[in-house]
Image 1 (cartoon, rainbow, N blue to C red):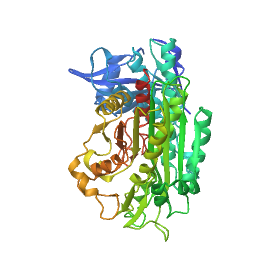
Image 2 (image 1 turned 30 degrees about the vertical axis):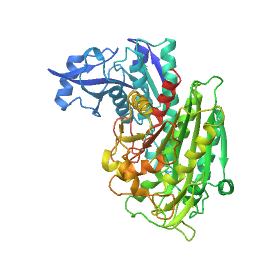
Image 3 (image 1 turned 180 degrees about the horizontal axis):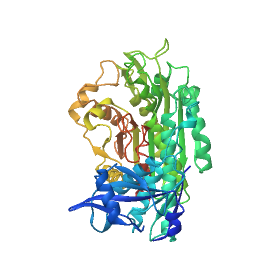
Image 4 (image 1 turned 60 degrees about the vertical axis):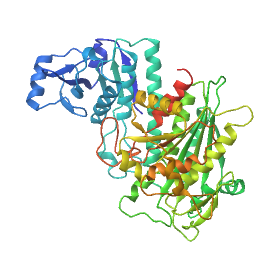
Length: 502
């Protein structure tokens, strides 16, 4: 686990005791510009050396040179120069993350990037902690050859020693821990992460944070009428689960329900997926991991907001007991679904969890201020928005705008998509209340329309399709590694903060 501290402006101890010193490089109107924060650097000689090396200052560029006050000088690209060091927070977050990734194998580093204000300190702290990540749990003979992530981060800032700065660092640590937990769960092989072991991983972490844990096993799910989760999981030797986590502070200013799709492995069931790329389907539980990690961080931060997090967990496998195309199942609450495609399974488990979340959240005088589901739901999301931008759909403009504002602050990319009513007819079934697939074109939107059928008319709701951004199969970038990314965790936490007045 990477530790993080603050050191005051111009601190010799802060930079000199570290093995590496990180500074920024930007693209000015007249050439390259060093952004050294509070560090003392011979800028003329360094700029000449960087020019000779062909440095550009572009985002994700990291250059290592022998240091003077430290063994290693690390230059991280900031892109276009901003006046008075007022860089966008996501620029600082990514620059710090790229530097931290490049410092694997180094014990300690001091980050001297522009951070005269608290949000900049927060961004650098988050970026450095998120970039200092590796997943080597399943390496054997090659593990000794792997470089450990950066162990210690010191941020040089004039705000060091102040109570608000210490609070910012504590928050950054809680957020990065939540993202790392999400990444670890996503990266875990499906032979180790089943619905049951998912619960076993989350239970102690939740309880230690003061979060209540409730689990429905396959018998309780069948008895309770959770036909969506049972139907998806019935083809697997690993039985399904519905995990509910509840955080209830002494004083609560709002009540949210977060529901995550938790398909611990998705073969497509009887509608078997092609072999090429199927290995990435261990990430089909990214939504469930995100909502569980988010509620744990929210509890650790002691935010004054009530959260119910639901993880709808199943493994979608082909077998003689798997559901078949044209089967009809009955979801929680009594709505029947014709399963035209067993590979459109995420919406089935979400339907059960969403109905139950509303039943409990809107009971008596209680009301859910927001219900948000998070899912790697459709390949159509990747076609529409690519691998770095997630989609948001919903029925409440105020909630959508609040979420997008939280996403911008958190540094996560979401784009609003419509729910065209004209596509709804394609979900009609000749024998059941609704079919689980509709028009092929606009598949991301018809999936959202399907879920909307399970939302109460007056319930503010948002649907997040994170299919592409949840799992990075390309090169690492910024603070994002290869594999599980932990997308949506930071935005869910920021939304909870904003909704509770922080």
